[in-house]
Amino acid sequence: MHIHNYEKIWLVLAMLLIVAIITTITYGATAAGISMVADDEETIDSTALGDDERFADPRVEQIDDNEYEVYVIARQFQFQPDPIEVPANSRVTFYVTSPDVLHGFHVEGTNANTMVIPGEVSKLTVEPNEPGEYGIVCNEYCGAGHHDMEGMLIVHPEDEFELEDDSDE
Amino acid sequence: MSGEGTVREIGHDEFDPKGTLALISVYFAILVIMWIFMYFVEFLGNELTVIG
View 1 (cartoon, rainbow over the protein chains, first blue to last red):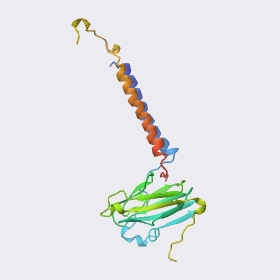
View 2: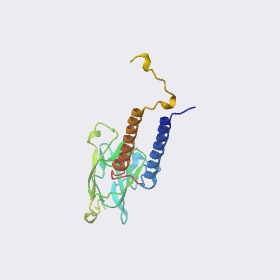
View 3: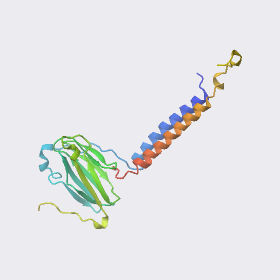
View 4: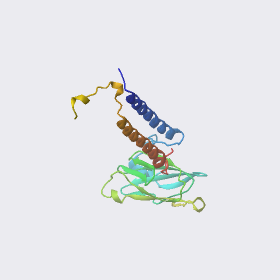
């Protein structure tokens, strides 16, 4: 078979493009540390979140010097806690679950986005560096009040942050 | 278009569509630039990013 020179050029470039795109994704997953929201969390009883140590009291919890865990319930039609307050330059892990229907948890304008499935816990870790207020929206249609379902993530400057103790003790 | 006298036969390798080559090169360049912009600027620069 005889292939024209221009076709050879095109074949090579197309191959290079595929290799470059795969390399970019690999770079993102390794060097840049981008990760996917996995389903490796244990399933829980969505009808008994009140008995779950994490979700009975949706809250922000400090687990290390600069590490926080946030237990979030997405329900028709709100996020709890609201607002979620964390300090900047920290490592924050969200555990999100739903007691009723499918919801979304999307920190608007960012890549922090996951589906929230009743009985499952979506876990995502982020490192907020910029203080500011981020809106949280539900991006899965969840019922008549879906368009009103929103929350707030407030990232405070490190030196102004104090963990609120909102437990009932 | 013109008379029979201007008919010219050329072989496979002599046919060089330079205009098409140029056009496709431009498309290709746009594709590469858009990819770099989309991934490295829009996606990686879009804090907060899921890292775990």
